[in-house]
Amino acid sequence: MYTALRATSQTLVAYLRQRVETDPVLGTLFDPAQGGSMLVSLDTPAEMADRPAEGLSVWLYRIVRDDQRLNAPPERIDLGHFRPTPLPLRLHYLMTPIREPQTAAELGQEVLGKVLQALYEHPVLRGVDLQPGLSPATLELTARLEPMTLEEISRIWEALDKSYRLSVSYEVTVVAVDPEQEPEDAGVVQVVLPDCGLIVAGS
Image (cartoon, rainbow, N blue to C red; front, side, top):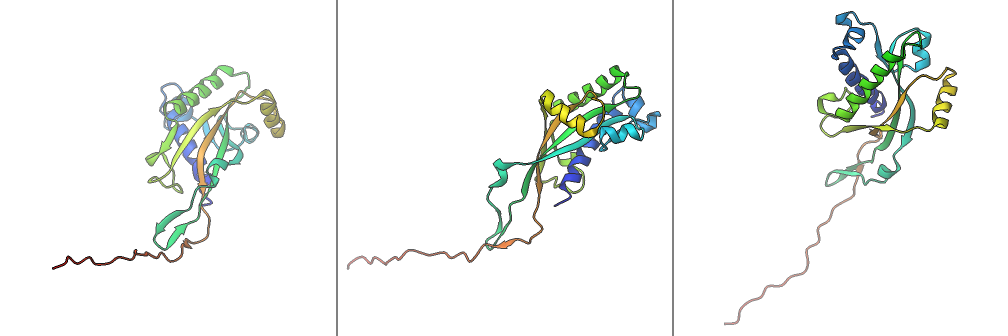
């Protein structure tokens, strides 16, 4: 469905929120039940800083088509119909701790350390991890820490028109956007039996 992008982002935020809220140290900052006010948000780092809001920005900044899976054959759902191949995507998220003043470097590093730990220990999100809009029976999301060059980092922060903040990038795959069209007719399946004869033993 076209809601797969939103559902994937919500899945990632829900998992990271659960990990920071249950952490013995960070829980007092993130968990409302413990008096915490810091957020795990899909807003950009600039939007969080301008509000102002503190916490972790999980910003979807890039969407790339997965060409390796694009030519996968359609799925046959019965003898007469097949489901069109969905559009496979790779989503890129910038993880940025937001804390004022910006000089609070130690806390930002702790938050990023928790993100790295959480996605290293549990890089595949499946089943009960998935938010509504994703199929828990068939889908798996894989999060991978990706390296970024200085030029790539600079372009992102220039687009945000903000001073650079410590951040890391994760690629999440594979996210499938299903076509809206109904299953297509696969045509008539005809079974042709070979000619055969009957051999009768002589008397």
